[in-house]
Amino acid sequence: MEKKGAIIIVLICMILVILAINFNVMDILKKTITGQASTTQTVSLNISVSSGNPFVYFITPVSAVTLTDAPNPTYLTINFSANDSDGAANLNNVTAAVNLTKATEALRMNSSCTVKDFSGNYANYSCNVTLWWFDGDGDWTIYANISDLNSNIAVNNTKTVTLNTLTGFVMSPSALTFGSLTPGTYNQTPTNYLLLNNTGNVDISSGNVQINATDLRGETTSSQALYAGNFSASPYTGGNIECNITASATQMVNKTFTGVANTILAAGNYTINDGTAQERVYLCLREIGGELSQQYYSTQNLGSWTVKIV
Amino acid sequence: MKNNKNQNIRRFISLAVLIVFGISFISAFSISAPYMENKELKMSPGEIKDLEFVLQNGGATEEINVKVTILDGSDIIRLIDGNDIYPVTPGEKVSVNMKITMPEDAKTSQNYSVKIGFKEVTSEGGSNFGFGTEIEQNFNAVIIGKENKINSKLILYLAIGIVLILLIIVLIIATKKKKSKK
Image (tube, each protein chain N blue to C red):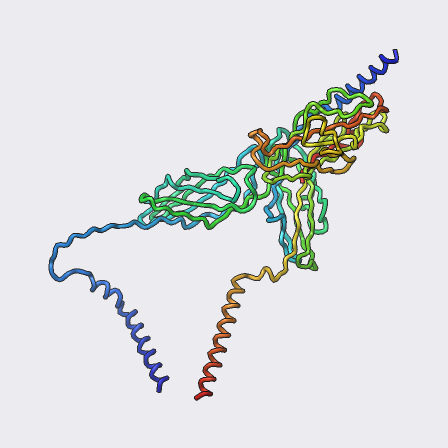
């Protein structure tokens, strides 16, 4: 009996719903209930109409970015779309902007995006963000934002862009010059040093600047040499410390990559030229054998020295 | 007289070594690699991936040649460009394409060390103290279990399904208990 009752109630409800749909009951109710009073009265009303908020509804996906190496910038174009229920004309185009953020990294932004096109309530914007070779690899959050003429702000930060890893360095100067080299002498240092600039976005840690040294063999008598093991390297100088392998200097090893201790090449803007993203490597010829004869010594026999970053 | 001779020899060696060291060198190039968190490339057993490295030579004024060598991991990674020396003109981006293949029998959490050397090719001839530059790119190819690749949505649906089934079982048991009490 209870079951029958329940079934009947359900059936009645279904019939009512079907009827309501077929006869547009809601429309009839809307038209009938107008709020119009049956008698005339004078009423003062304060009506404030709030405009619809703008909405950044789409950011065009951006594929992973290969940064241009130093010293050139990378221009990244980011497009986004916004709408405003009050019409695209209500969007304040001059406020369209894109920011790229990543923890510990400097803000990259474009606050002067251009309108590509607009129609009805919708508008598309194009923004150019300048990136630099030292901007960190990994995911950066894209903040696309715009305000309407009523100063309502819309922000979309749901998308990211990945910057690829960039590893590089520049080595200079144009020449290494030893003032005077005579057989049987010790601790001879060039008058200048190797300057390494980090041209990428990867920090090179201590020991990962490596030098593969080779003996400088005599070009006439190849059994004589300025031996690789007699060279040392160091990021420090003064008081011949670059020659002191019992202190901080690193002794070179023939045909072997040897990390120069304490040499750090952090990523950064080396063009400031204040030591940022720069490292100096001082070389020292610790011993010039007294047995050396008069001839040219070079890497012709055993190959070039190589400076490597890992 | 002997003293004079010694001085001459010393002067010659001094001059020779000065010439040897007085050769110009400015070296610059860079490599861009796909971003890998913690330098780890996660792959499944049997999976094949293409990797693109990009060579640039922005800080220089002349074209250089870069030789690419797989120093470690040649059992899983190989160059697919047909040539291991790449000319790089200043301002250009040159692609170096590689393919990495995980063995079918690779075990979960197993690591494959990959080291790739990018070395500027320098001329070896002539009387000079030649300097070259090299950049080494290292990463680990880490094997992840296939179970890690199950779609997270599928897991959610499975969980909801299990909960619904449990609810139905509980309702059936409760109904039966009610009936048995009656």
